[in-house]
Image 1 (spheres, one colour):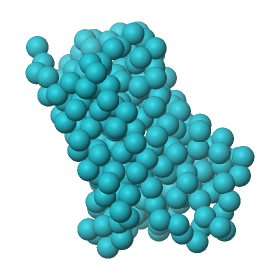
Image 2 (spheres, rainbow, N blue to C red):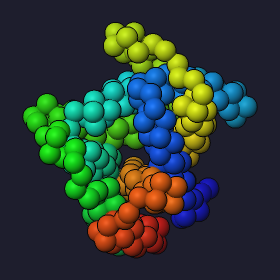
Image 3 (cartoon, one colour):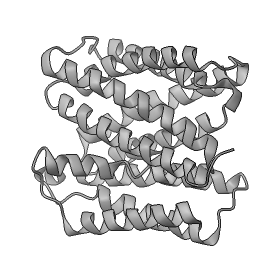
Image 4 (cartoon, helix red, strand yellow):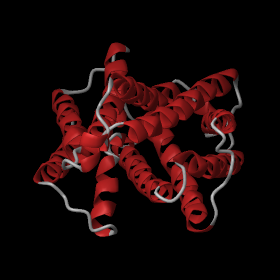
Length: 285
């Protein structure tokens, strides 16, 4: 039996870990190709998840393998397309659009599957979607003019957002009695696909020095984010947990302000306040 706050708590913990992981991985990707960072973080998360799955136990059923593998495919392509969009278009446009699509997919699928949150929680979901856009919003930067938002970048952005959003949807279909095994199969599949992409793009080379250490840390954070994600989906509605986990840009933004001394816009502050209000509405509704 789970308490009313357990699902939202796990969802927020997952979003926090995802946000910190994105920050760490982003710093590492400033020094080496992003794909080389993932070449380390994904296998690390795979090994850690496998160890945790053995400790926790669970039924390795067909559902655990199938849904986990499908989730891994969405993870791999989501990362690939997201980095491709960031490398080809304006970050100030790609980032917020991806974030709102990620939030919208589990909400839409959850409602389509018959989920009916209460009125207050539904209003909280709507407010959280607005918060995702505002928190992800960046001030205008030189790359917005140098790298236009072309149709190719638009399709990459759409594809990455849908793929990341499906990550929540697909793993939510895995049987609860499987424990953490669906996450293991997801990471195995994603790791294999990333390795194939690295070979094809001639990036099959692990980073060294600081980027390597950051990639290892990202792998640990990714492990925690995935475990919290699964627990959140098991304890809450897909439409509610999905939108709370999609508030991950808030953690990334706070770290950018504290560590990198980046400036925060007034819209991002409004987004943070809206996110806090949305969390309270979803948890209480």
